[in-house]
Image (cartoon, rainbow, N blue to C red; front, side, top):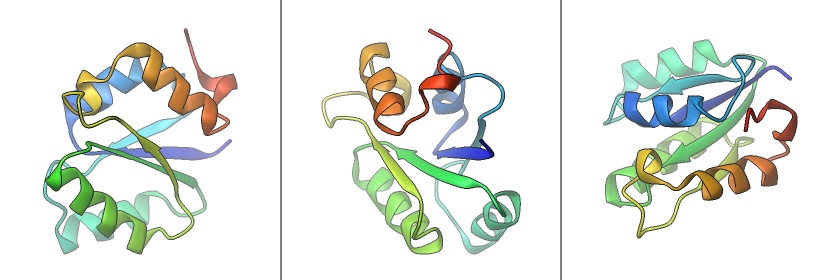
Length: 109
């Protein structure tokens, strides 16, 4: 599968990488998503299946909204409001979200 997961920050990518093989690329918005960064993400994801995994806070929801507009066919993974973002999401919940997105064969744990 030629797929990419887009997250907000480096700590999110580091946390998520523990669960996924290198076959799945993980890209960061690096916080606020501006036009330049969005254009770069679009170029990096041509012909790839896209997954969006952002925090469940105001900033994360805004980034998700912008990404969803740019990538209308993207699949969405969700964390819960009570978790401290993607990086603070418990292992079991992340694995559950990856399994729901049919990424089972790329899960390392």
